[in-house]
Image (cartoon, rainbow, N blue to C red; front, side):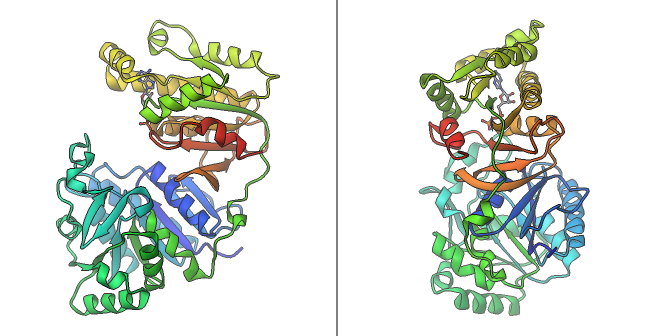
Length: 424
Ligand code: ADP
């Protein structure tokens, strides 16, 4: 088996899927692992994406986990390493991006890398080193008030310089728009001035594609998921539907939803309006000792012969969520619901569900864990950043299951219907 070209380290789970999906649509066959895998991939792939949960943990721990991931990737003989962070460039207030970049550069013995969180398709662009979210500077966007990782400075050169011992420079748009040769010579000039990490501007996909060739041969690339679209061509890989091909979908269809986002509320409502079979979980009943897991599974059993998907949801409008949280505590309510939904997901799979949609980032994490999934082959995207995946679960009756993990606000209103249509 040929070794993978790219080895990726992502600082969170849905970010990993986002990156994996971009690589797939650019023609790479990709496996995403949950944490550092114990075994090499069982099939030939072009990229491996290791999903860590290191965005908001202590820098020392983030460094330790990232180095362990790097060490594993090196045993797989990958040609280039990609450190993936958020397109809003957030980590902890002290910053994890700089320390992790430093540690990876030291370990790889490399003297230069880039940093580019741009993903213009999703409204993240970098111009003159400043990061924009949509039409406004990052510091004027909602990220200013993010509960865990507020971003109050949009100048990425400054933000990163405060996090790294290395000198940070800028490849600004005047070079990027002239193409890869101009980017390469700008990089060479910066390196001769002692710059070791360069922020690179990008305001559209052409910019991302233009910088791709200039990054060939760099042992390390650090970026959001956008830069990934320009890399496969460096390895002679071109876009092809084959990369997204998964085994045929089998088994019953189900949706488990624990997201309470605006988008997910609309998706649940849309599914129900279309006459979809739906079962609602009330957190207060769980506290009262009702065995909602068994109830939900018994309800789903009755629909065994139906062809349509079944939906089990805790999704609720903000007012109802607030009331529950006030009574139970935010974390307690969240964990209780996550636990119940993950047991339901496992029960459904054990009853023959082979096509599973999970809505909610944390909910997805809980379900993946309950299903014992440790790696997923990435397939076609249902919505940007939300692909169908194929995974093995010891609870499955089918030979592997199809699963898609939709974080909060992703997907159009008809997502639950559209997702299954794509598998037929
Ligand atoms: P998102 O991706 O939309 O943020 P998550 O799954 O990450 O979704 O987070 C939603 C959180 O809300 C989870 O912890 C989930 O268990 C919790 N939750 C779901 N439904 C309810 C509810 N009705 N009341 C209170 N908390 C809920």
